[in-house]
Image 1 (tube, helix red, strand yellow):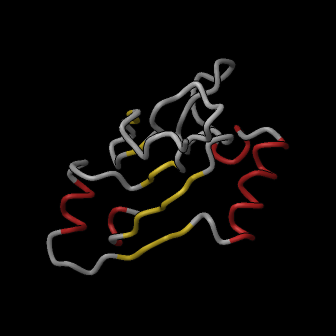
Image 2 (cartoon, rainbow, N blue to C red; image 1 turned 135 degrees about the vertical axis):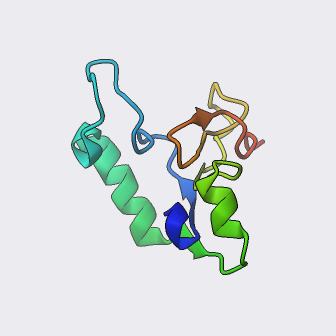
Length: 105
């Protein structure tokens, strides 16, 4: 994503982030890490248009993505019943933090 200046927005809260490890895995196995339910959630987000991909053409924007200064994936805002105040963001280097969109009220 980062090399091409692409950023993914509203990654579903109920799906494992790309590269995120499940407790039972030693390394990420891509889409195979997702449960059938998580695959359905991701599929629904793609179908209903809530999961969006934006391309930025600004000269320095891809550089800031590749340097992991800006996230390449933003999770959707957590719902009101979520235990999380903020959703995850993911960077090119694989780092994930909880400083994404704030919980919906």
